[in-house]
Length: 257
Image 1 (tube, helix red, strand yellow):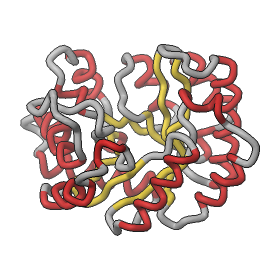
Image 2 (cartoon, helix red, strand yellow; image 1 turned 180 degrees about the horizontal axis):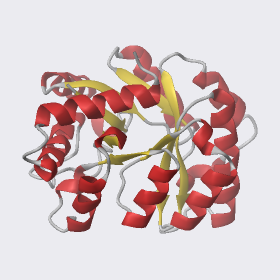
Image 3 (cartoon, one colour; image 1 turned 135 degrees about the vertical axis):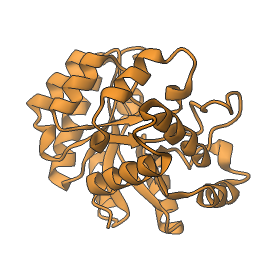
Image 4 (spheres, one colour; image 1 turned 90 degrees about the vertical axis):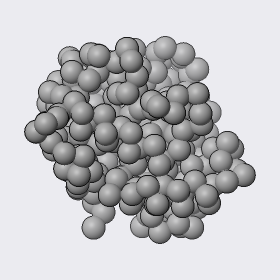
């Protein structure tokens, strides 16, 4: 049974068949899904979906692209949302210097604030980082994010970032990128990462894994990520072991019984 630890089920691309997609995931062996908040509106949507579907859990938070929009009352509203028992993480938060949709200083300041809030709420953090490795690690250390722990979602960094993240006690979550033809280095990192620190995700509707490239991604396809991990660790680890250990890891991190 798989745990897709990072989805965006509120995305408009699912408006016509969201129920069918969740049903298809369950039929494919996806036992649990996490849907992610990226701003105030999507955080509210994530909580609403978690309330609607027993298999769905939620996170709340503000993505680095969106932190320039944080206004009066946002953090109070996120605190209120986080009181819901289905909210098990804070994020996705972090730094993204590739697009700089929000100014870098604003990103750093809001990242610090949101780590503070996650620590207050005692929720693990879901980290998005792109072309910002040194600042991300430094801020996580300075703000004592290890007190609550967390995961580097959709990991696609280098071996040094993997080491830094693992040294902080964080998990690495691998997505459909792991199946891409040119992801040789990432597969090497996945192979060297202790299995008790690995999660799997789709990041759907983005990053559709092979052999479904070109289609809209969906939670059922997290099985392809698990299969790729199994191939990487073959013959020592079976697909069933990958499913079990990554699910156990996710439940441990997010404190889901």
